Amino acid sequence: MKIYAISDLHLSKSDPKPMNIFGNAWTDHWHKIRYDWRNKVNTDDVVLIPGDISWAITLEGALPDLLEIGELPGKKILIKGNHDYWWESPTKIRNILSHNMFIIQNDFIDIGEYNVCGTRGWLLPEDDRFKKDDEKIYKRELLRLEMSLNKAVKASDKPIIVMIHYPPVNEKNSISEFVHIMKRFDVLACVYGHLHGESLKNTMEGSIEGIDFYNVSCDYLDFSLKGITPVKRNRII
Image 1 (tube, rainbow, N blue to C red):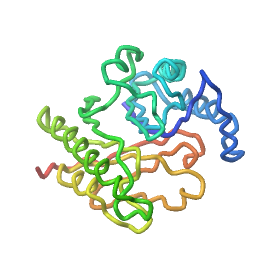
Image 2: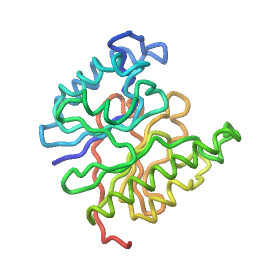
Image 3: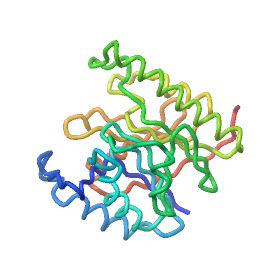
Image 4: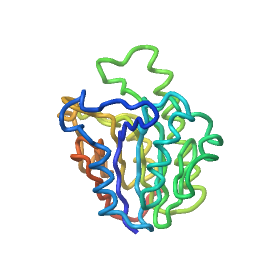
């Protein structure tokens, strides 16, 4: 089994939205991703998709996008992004997903060698755009990450990978409470997205607090899936 990740697919089959308004690199971006996906991923592999999956507003509108993802090889694991307005109750989403697609919401997915946890995340308090209204959402997302991790740890002692949509670190090298929680649960690796265009200059990757961080925004990856290879180590909790 191999693990791949790619974020921010921004699909819009039911109500097409030309993504090249965000730059020429986005022209036919889904074609590029699918071509790379089919050339890399086998049936037994796992693809992590940390958010911003579809521009659709409703679950019905997102269905064509979800079906196209489901037709691709591998087991797909999804979390919610800030633009996934179609994301309804977990039960409704799971009822329409293909057999090889899974979502994480306050829980985790066992993929064999690893447990995968996650949450959407939010702006960090150190961000200049962080306002008073953001604090409640930020704290709620911290609780959701901790809930996901607690369930995984109670289920088994398998090493953990975290998916989060918003970057849990920023260009100021600030270590957020998301990272502190991950460290407490001895998370091996974390994949995130959300950053595009000029914001990609703020990418933080590599080992931070003993956790391997990967920015997997599709334009950062030139619309190719990123191989994730967590280094296993003895758990300390």
